[in-house]
Every structure is written in structure tokens, then in C-alpha cells.
Length: 89
Image (cartoon, rainbow, N blue to C red; front, side, top):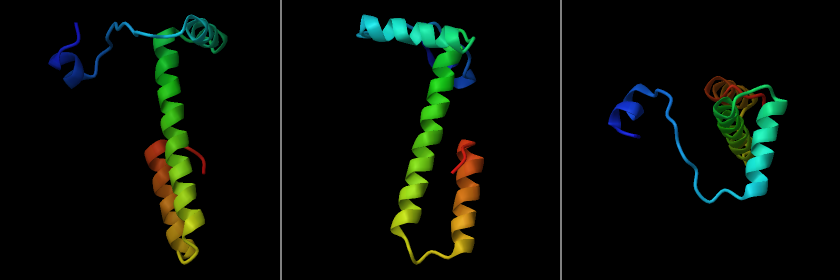
């Protein structure tokens, strides 16, 4: 059961996911297998990848829209984004 203790210690939980299309569930399971991961591991991998791309896209939008930012500031923003999201920009 999902309770405050699971949230606080960030331990692993067994969970059911509702309303997943059968074809997408099959693709999810096969992708996990192709990556040599258990489904829970693959789920975490997908979340991390999504987060890294989201951060990268946001930083690129800021840098593209702001022509008045110095190269030094751009380098600092890129460094902070990499450290936070672990992603190449």
C-alpha cells in the first residue's frame, strides 16, 4: 500500500497503472527487455530521460530567445543545467 512512509523514504513500491493501452504496454515491456532492464528500472530510466530532455529544451529556448545574454552567462546556465539534469546541451 502506498503510504507516507513509502513517500518519505523513497523506497520501491508495487503499483498498478490504469488505462494503459494493451499495445503500448506490450511495447513498454519489450523495450525494457531490449535494454536489459526490469520494468521498474526501465520506468525510472524513462522518467530520467524525459526530465533531462525537458530541462535541455527549456534552456535552449531561453538561450535562443535571449540574444543579449553574455557568453559567460550562457556558459553558466549550460553548466547549471548539466549539473541539475545530467544532460548534454
